[in-house]
Image 1 (cartoon, rainbow, N blue to C red):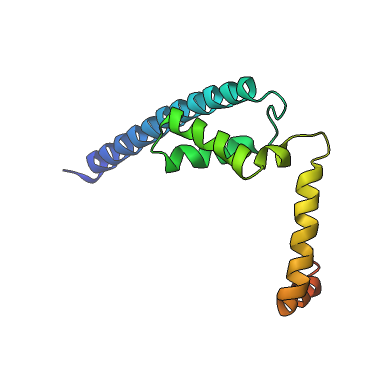
Image 2: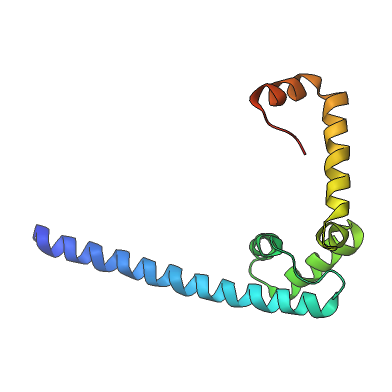
Length: 125
């Protein structure tokens, strides 16, 4: 094969990978939308909050793309680990309380890390 032919073959192969990736992205996006719609219907008190899509995207990866499993894991996280309380509410009071507690634990149990972060101007909260 000549160099030009090889370049064309390589370009076409790359284009096919991009098309496949785009199709995969569309499928994932549709799954995300369906899971989030189902969850907002299941728990309207929590509803949808920015950032939930990132968690559900990760759940889809862990559950090998299975929507039903991802949905049930999301429900379990919200019920058992109170993530619903963290996402729910207009001011995310539960999340703020968790971050306050984390900040206190870092100060108490990881003082060197706390000093290092403060030296960098980074707050745990």
